[in-house]
Length: 254
Image (cartoon, rainbow, N blue to C red; front, top):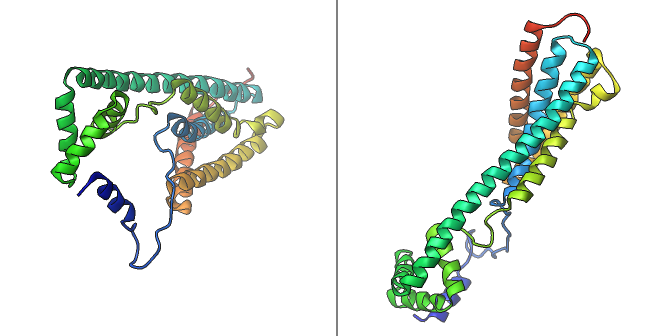
């Protein structure tokens, strides 16, 4: 079997599905990008942390200004913390992957024949005939840039062009956290007392359900289950801090 025949056979193979059913083209979401992950969980973290903080402080019965200050402080501090954490995390991961790529690049420069044999062995282990695997490895190893790209994907499981952007992840996380955190704070900017508490609870619950639905759309999971799970997490966190605030309490004005 030649290289051309191999690729042709793979292209002609039907996709999954009942016999006789036409294969439908499909696209995959980018699930490795740091920005997407940071945005999704940033909104969730901002909502859960700030609704818990606001209700916990409000339960202690301070003046409305204290609740507003706590909510604003939680919003800003949390967003900065999330952004810094994402930056350090993605930058550290990027530096680790760059180190692995540099090691692979040196191996390709010092031992190109051995690396070519190693690549052929990978294809053989996946069921490709020995002669075809050797031909594929030889062609892919002819160009140094292509060889590095191929070894990075086949050996390391990474795409050298998609190592993640720490700045993009940090900015996305910062903005997403603020979006989630500002929702339960809005009632306290225009109201106070029991009305503001109830409004924060309603807005927080609605936002939690929406975040769960958006996450289900991204992951392909059941919308109802994902939404209820997100609501349960937010409710549990808020209930704990509300209970602590009620137990401690404060009196007088600040």
